[in-house]
Amino acid sequence: MVWEAPISCHRRLVARFLEHDRATWARLLRPEYHFFHSRVKTVHKELSESLAILNALGSRLEHFRHVVDLCCGKSLTSAILAARRPSVQITAVDIVSPDTVPHYSEAGVSSVEYLQMDIMSDQFPAALARRAAEAGGDTAVLGVHCCGRLSMRAVELFRDMEEVRACVLMPCCGANATSAPSAMAHHYGVGLSDPEFYQKWCDYLQADLEGVPGATVHRAPVPGVLSPKRVVLTAWRAPGSPPPEQST
Image (cartoon, rainbow, N blue to C red; front, side, top):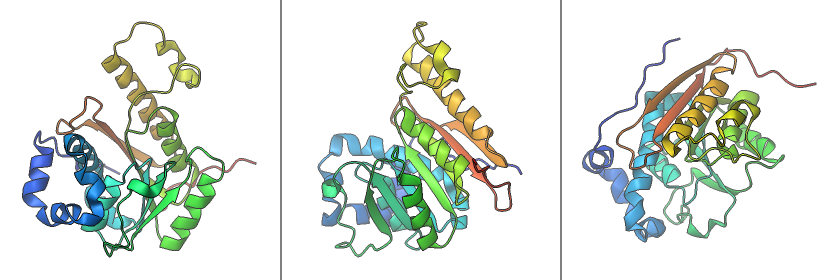
């Protein structure tokens, strides 16, 4: 299988969105999404990150009935996706109170469900499997700037759950030294700059994704993301590929 990279490297990522996807932008300006409006200084940065993640899926989104927005914060990625693809079931997950999540029901959006849960908990995979079964189709897991072991958890879900057929990840900071995987241990305390360490962290996650049977992995920096941590890793496991190995 050849992965056709759909990621745009256009530096004006947000400007293109505002110009060409006015219907989605108009929806985000509605009162039900007011928590986005209260953070004008940061919303363009977060918008660029969400757009890069969604662009990475591109036309392959048509393969999925269910998308999971891991560590969603105020769920901007979910809001954009719900406006663009109302038929896709979305699970927005975070450990924080849903007080700052848009009022989806009041906005007439029934496709987004907020799940207040720690994605590192033992119960989370089962909860995710239930949501995938309810949606009745394959699942894609998205992670925008999941810190440390949270990015590793996204990879684990892709590796271990047959329902999860895609993982799109924009890594953030790496795991701290005390909880780092052994393959990363030699990169700590050796004077690497932040950009150098970030690339090593992305290397580790990419290798982990490439170790999943049947997976095709693409990596690209997206210049239009308004953050220095702008690498997007996209992994896809086609239907019919080997299922995850189950531990006994």
